[in-house]
Length: 164
Image 1 (cartoon, one colour):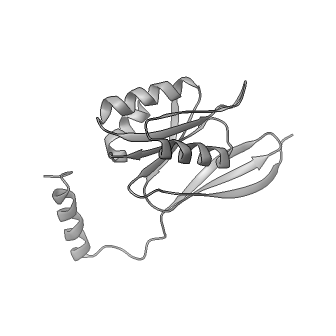
Image 2 (cartoon, rainbow, N blue to C red; image 1 turned 180 degrees about the vertical axis):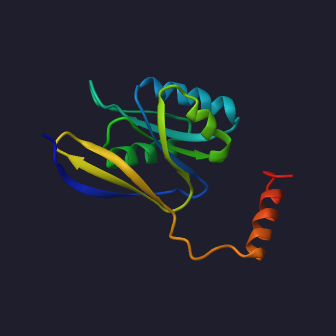
């Protein structure tokens, strides 16, 4: 019978100008499939990707075209230490540009977060191993938007080209 040994909170660094996507997948084929998705959906994207293999050799598999982001991805995947978790850092693209394509990769089971906010991953450890149980993405809300806040949101989305 398995028992919980401990909970752990992993702080995830976000290098300047980047975003991180953390998810769960079930097969090492994910590494090459996500590489293809990223380079085909956003020309010029820079990224580093790491995937924790959960059986067999149990290696951290990785790919990428930005050495710094690859190092971040490997480091965070190692500190999370849970099987079948992936960590993807991106630059020159936004999560909104690729999240649906990532979700469409047949090996991808779940995306926990896609953010540039301060991030923590909540991990549980049992006598079998480690698993992600959730994330803390950003900070607690300070209130409810008013009419001015709604106007600012409306104008912002149009100014950056996401709405007409």
